[in-house]
Length: 412
Figure 1 (spheres, one colour):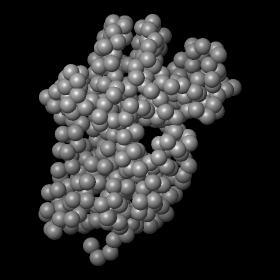
Figure 2 (cartoon, helix red, strand yellow):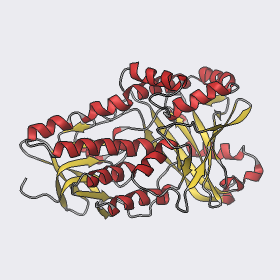
Figure 3 (cartoon, rainbow, N blue to C red):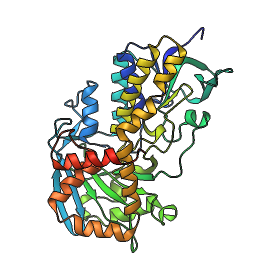
Figure 4 (tube, helix red, strand yellow):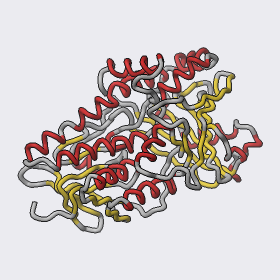
């Protein structure tokens, strides 16, 4: 190509795109990060960050001790008539605390960190599709809503679940992968200050127990993020009014928590959760998928931020190596290793997650697990590690079991 606007164009300045851009810039590449909105901007999320996500922030030099970051010790689990607290595990690989920070400024902080490290970011630029090379069919740039074209040697799609770029390159969702829905709002509430992320494991729609959970995450500013996450593995999924379900769930909470319409500080909003690599391959013809665009959400717990940043880092490592290749053929061979690298890292674990969500889609199994599993603290500590993907490579017996299961399970 005779002229390019950047070595790499990254589309979307969420956690995946900003992490990819950060690491690409660290590798000495010229990176253009295009974001369709302008910061600050809202994003539907529970705002809770596990130790896995905290580690990624620390690795990028984000100051998580600065004002506005609310620390938590672990999970408080409610269900089956039980209520108990599980501290985050003590591990070598991850810190022993989680965080809460609203996406209203979380994404802006991570994007600003990328800019501080050499990334060029343009806000208010809506990418509408790929620019393809006539001879090879490779993506060589992107078009935007305002009629402009930006060119690069490689493009990273970090544009979320709907990912216009991936669709424009012929990559569609896999129907054999689970999908989730999250709905949430904020309330002024005394529950704003809490040392634990609170999870409710029993979601009832009338007499039907649904696969999913409710949450109450204190934001520390006088408000609490309150929401529900549901899976599409139940027969009732398509017929549920999620916003109404959240309203009914909130009404059943203790009155002194203040989960009432007059205390609501934001409308109820919802978002899809693409899970277990529901869009593949993660590399094709010059396009690299990271985060939600490639369905990198953990099916066990609906966590996406940690995997967004991790896949951004992995993609950046592969891209940096590829662009140092001496020939187009060598670059292509290196880039084609990216999907396998992701599957080696997460594929078996995500397969276990798929089996898990299929199981809890059956109300009888969900009820049995809630009723008989929760009373056993040792089992629940194992479950916390499994569902949060929080293990050491050479840890205790539970770590070894989870790691072994992930290794022998077929990759997602």
